[in-house]
Length: 258
Image 1 (cartoon, one colour):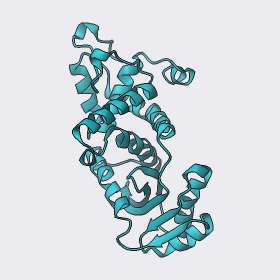
Image 2 (image 1 turned 180 degrees about the vertical axis):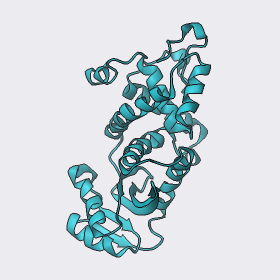
Image 3 (image 1 turned 180 degrees about the horizontal axis):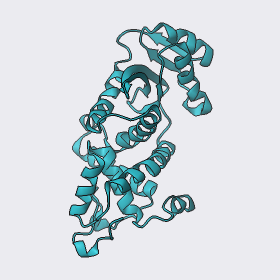
Image 4 (image 1 turned 30 degrees about the horizontal axis):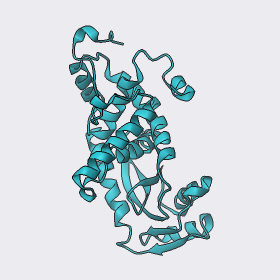
């Protein structure tokens, strides 16, 4: 196992295969921490929902960063949109940018929806020159033009009410997941959750409607191999090459409860 991955699992009682599988279940399906706890208990892995929460918080962001590094070069056309969200009775704005392939490039949870917030969001891609887009498609929000001219002066901007529909559709899975987990408790909580959830769920969900059956199986197998490499799980043999996870089936093999 890589040294960085070994340090990530330091002092953990469970092997990386179990913690990686728990994070995968939580991000791939609309489950709560206790749902993941019950599913693992059915396989003989006895732990608490707090353990699953700690895994998602500590390892989820690291997995998302590794998946971004392994992802091909992002598209040069970004669709940007913002929606309102309520956190502890206070209204915040969720800024999101996706490329033409539907991959989430960046998100930002901000308390305002003005030029200062738009400028902060547009400045984030400049930290990585490889991620600077060629064209940015936005809606008719007036603050976008001034913010783009200040933060990304060489990037072309196209404003139209319907051109950023791809970014608007990208909000739907997050909204659905937010309702299931009964919303976030703070802006930092919302930022951490979405920064990890977006890359992981996009990696685990190939766009099935654009792939044939054979291509979908090959893509799923390749992404499962990538996930095993990211989580530090040993590769399986040829007999177990299908994209599924194996767990202990008897309670005698279970690890004592934390």
